[in-house]
Length: 83
Image (cartoon, rainbow, N blue to C red; front, side):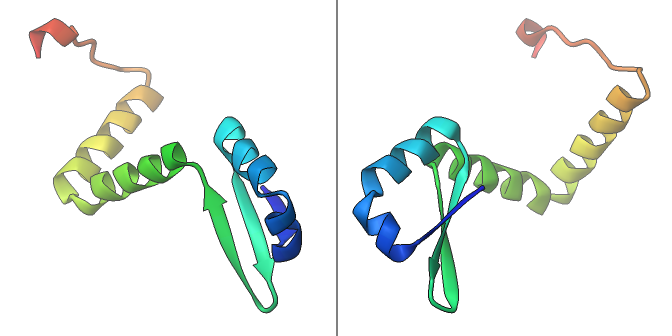
């Protein structure tokens, strides 16, 4: 995660936005006693999707049981055409 101050951000806004988009990282912009974070739209959408999945008890349970199956080495193979 990169960090800059508001003055440097203003002076180099295109560079910072390009870096965030291309690297799919985050940029912390310090502004006195507070800060903001700049992330790409792709990263933001990923965060919102994760929030949505974790907000549903049923989806959260399914996700965690799937992860446990993979960790146990006992995955279930599914053909996408059968869904």
